[in-house]
Length: 377
Image (tube, rainbow, N blue to C red):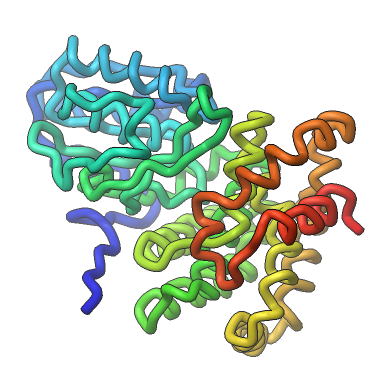
């Protein structure tokens, strides 16, 4: 027996779906967002205007950084406690939504401590708040998952905090929001989504439900992501937005793999973008995992579905087409730094999603893989 949970109460998708906010009632609404982009594009003003008919109080908490830390969410939770919201609307990229999810958890359950969230049992449901996720980027699918990825500075690593109480109640997939993404952001976040889809598709924990979602998402992303990056039209942006959400529905039930295990180690250490790291690592890890016959069969099936050749080659061509670098060295990690940190990186790449990789990996096996991904050899 296996229980499934693909999203919260409701997913609303399509251009203009942000207007669904007009249907919500509340006494106090906390809007959580990142830096300047959602203000500059007028999205925050639009959200406030759509919430206005409820005649409740509205507060905006902004400034969430790209890799939110446990300290950041602790500060945010304090602001929540002072305002006492019954509605939380997280607007922006995956980092803003992840941070808002953790802030809400700490607000609802003040006995919890941010630095312990990845190591202690967490409540399964919230009682005080309705949580709405409005992604402006197309990659993390955090709007439908029970995961919040945070940086734990004391450990120097990113970790996934998991609890059903973190899953948003309402996800709004309005393709007009990712229209604001520049091509490089569309590329990196889209590669994050493709990594979710492919890692889930080859996961040993997958089944017919997650396989269908992840394979469909992967095929759709391989087709529409380059169009989204190059043309930036509403149709392709909405399609990528939808496919990345499907990938999230799948992996939240079947898990990911070693790409994410390594990316969380490097991201926490060097404060690099998660999508960028996933994009660089993906073909190297897929090649490593192809020594598993089931993985090879799954990728061969996807190649047949897409009709565009073997999947690793598709990934490499896609990366080149949308301007993603090919090696970890090209992300800006100096060789001296990489070699100095090498033992730590190899050790910490073994945790997280690497534990459910299709092939179990030892530290000694991890080392040549990391060097291959760094140097491109």
